[in-house]
Length: 121
Image (spheres, rainbow, N blue to C red):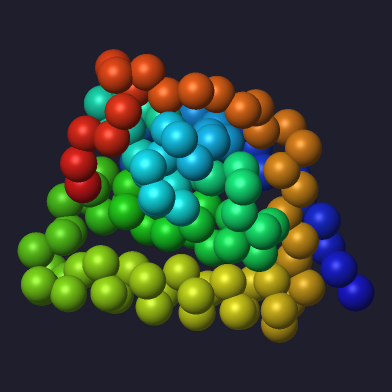
């Protein structure tokens, strides 16, 4: 049995709202996704297969959680590696074992502008 869940156009992490958009490869310059924290925006590459969009969404949410709660130093030097393993592990649990399917239908495509670009994690 599959449970379909709509990806909301906005999520809140901590006290901070983040709008979610899908962006083209030219805007993401090789990244599967990115977070523009000061602008409150999360971008996921629209060219990815849906399964990869799903784990990229988890990945960017994890980055945002780590930034909002300022816990990167607790993860040590391999923070990105830990996030990569967590996004795949959570994806396996949610999508393959629990039968959750994310519906990206309400997420708009948007081009990045210099103001909205990646400002670092």
